[in-house]
Length: 107
Length: 116
Image (cartoon, rainbow over the protein chains, first blue to last red):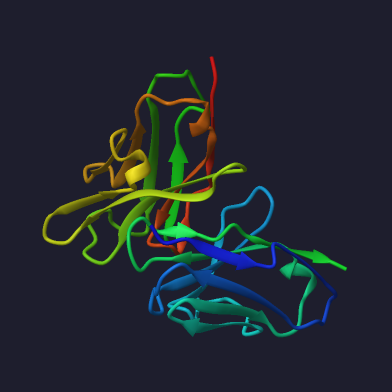
């Protein structure tokens, strides 16, 4: 099984900051990576698919990059609505697997 | 707009079967391009993909090895829905369960507690 590891686990930042979250796969997953945002009590929301493709309706301040085993999610200028938990997910091979999450907190 | 509406009990006794249904609107369970997934989330296990069903001229079912011997995912074309059955549940199966189309449309989630 492919193990997904996110860093950091918690990130404190301020409105307007640029932040980056990293996701590493235990083996190559090409570009078969998605990023999700989750708020308390809600289902995850797809932000990015195939490593760098922005899902329809997602603000352009979100971007994704990477391939192989290392990926990043960048938020260019944090907005109040962005404070949430973020997950990466590989869908290169079964079983699909998620990172443990990065909680983005207000500094 | 595609929507998924989940239904099923929130409490299941140990050793019994967990059964959930996901009703689809705005798409078809028989779509030749979509996949229909079940994912669960718990504090101890995080987000865990359980399995999927999809139609590509015939029906396919894929399950995670961790639950493979206990899980059944079935499409119901007459009602345009799909279901999850998880047998022989234990307290470790306590989680919020989501039905998901591909990875872009999620149901509202059903919190299931396994307890006597």
